[in-house]
Structures are given as C-alpha cells and as structure tokens.
Length: 383
Figure 1: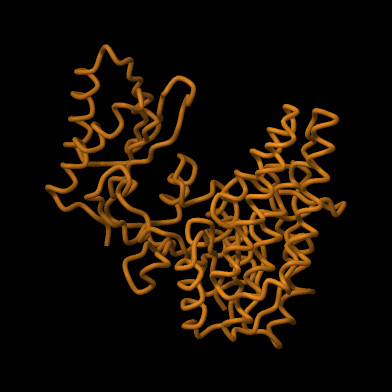
Figure 2: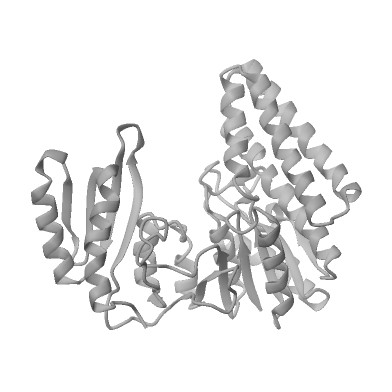
C-alpha cells in the first residue's frame, strides 16, 4: 500500500489533473490519495474572510463567486458532469456566504469559524476528484478526514493525535481495503475530540499524508508536486539548480524546520519513527528525477539554499544555507563583509553546517548565484 498526495501546485489546471489520473492508473498497489484544495483556493478563501471582517462584504462575496466559477469551469474542461457536482457546489457556496455575512455583521472571526470556512476548499476538492475518477473509470472510495484525523484543540495549527488516528484507521479504514483499491481523503483538515473541524496550518496536506502512511505502515509516502524533488535551490531563483536525490530523515527535519516549502515542519517525525520512506516527485514527469527521504545517513551533506520571508513589510528575507563546503562558507563571509551598508545579519553557530542570514530581499538572488557557482564547479550533489 502506498500513500500519494497531490496539492494545489499540481491541481490547478487541466494538465495537472490528467497527470494525476495517469499516475493513479499506473500504480500497482492499493493506495490512499490525499487531496488538498486546488490552486490558491485556500488563500482566496482567507482573503474573502479578511474583506468581510473589514465590512467589505461585496468584494468578499465576489471572491466566493470567482472560486465557484473556477471549479465549474474546471469541471467543464475535464468533461465532468456539472449536474452531479452542482448540488455540492451550491451547498458549499451557501455555507461560505452565510459565514461571510456573520463575519461582516460581528466584525470578528473565531478560530473555529475560520477552520470551518477554510475547510470548504478541501470539501470541494475531494468531491471533484471523486467525480473525475468516475469519468476516467477509476473506482474509488471517499474517506471523511474529520472522522479519521483526530487533532488537538488548537484551531488553525492543530496537531494530529497519533493513538486516536491509529484506532480510527484500524476500525474504519483498514477493513475497506478488502473492497477498494483506491481511497481519497482531504488533507489539511481534521477534527478535535468534540467533532469540531480543525485545520493543521498551510501546506499541511503533506502532514496528513505522512501521518496516514506512517501509521498504516505504507511501503512509501509519495508527495507529488510540480518540481523534480528537492533541489539545491528553488528553480525560480536559480535555473542551474542541482537535484538532491537522497537525504536522511534527520536532514529532512532540518529542512522542514527551516522553511522548506516542500516539507511541513511536523511531517518527518512519524515516517522516521516507523521508518517509512518519503519521496518528493514531479507529477509532470512521473518517471523522472525525485528525492528519496529515508533512514540512510549520507556520507556528505549536500548544499541547499532555503529562502523564506523574514519581515515582508520591510522587504527582508531569511536565507538559510545548509553546507559543509568550505569554499561556500569562505565566500559567504567575504560577501557579508563587502555589504556592510546593507545590514546583513549572519549567524553560523546553529550547527556546524547550518547558516542563516537576514538580508534585504534584493540581495537574495545575487548571493545565491555567487555561492551556487561553487556547487556547480564541483558538481556537488547527493547520491
């Protein structure tokens, strides 16, 4: 059995959905498919709440109209029966607009309301994928994430409770594998012990996949995205990026805790505990390069650059560099010394190979390109 996760980076236009269908059809094992909201739907829903909070109800409602139009147009482009989906669409639309009116009147958003509101992106997505699979002759069964992913009470950043989920899987999911080869479940959402909808934070569909795959002792947890695994640097920042073919759970945890966009900060804990391999794969090139994360410690630590926003209002960025390359470290100090007027803050005492810089975001691409040249010269990679 394998767990496959597909998120908004893939599920945003027709070609991505068809790529997912091909990947699912090629599998030979039973699988659970974790689905997150399409495209940037979650952020759009969040924006509509913020507008309603400020009393701009018309603009908030327009965003909901756009969200529903997007899904309806997508169904048409994929030749999915709009009649079957429309009832669900109308129910979600009605709930969202009713909640927006309440937010606009009270000028407040409770954490509970926010989670219920944002969860609707996943609700639409799962129903949509179910119908897509039917249209492509893939038999599947939908699991309700709120009945399986039991979390604590911290709305917006809820943490899964392992022993509760283990019980639910044992009782309610494992028996279903006798009848179904493919099951679909929403990522990102769960419920607390009182049955209230919770969400686990942005990009937490990867966490859902890792929890399910680990507790079910899957052969592999596959995260399908739009890049060919973990790279030495975000391809958008440096075209000559280098593939990182294999990393250990320990290094993956460091990446996850320092802002890697591909790894949720809690998602490595359970795969490490149960020794379940995790792979980061490109949905648009299913047989191409990918990154495997497992318990094997590599002899060398590959150089990886991670960029996150530090202080967006002040155009500051946080650059994390993981490296044991002495040339990069030496050049890093020289670069910082040459930019004394740019107030670069450098820390190199976190671990022997983890370095962080807070700097003006206009300098980020420049320093990455300079330092990345040392990797290219040595063809540094992991194997």
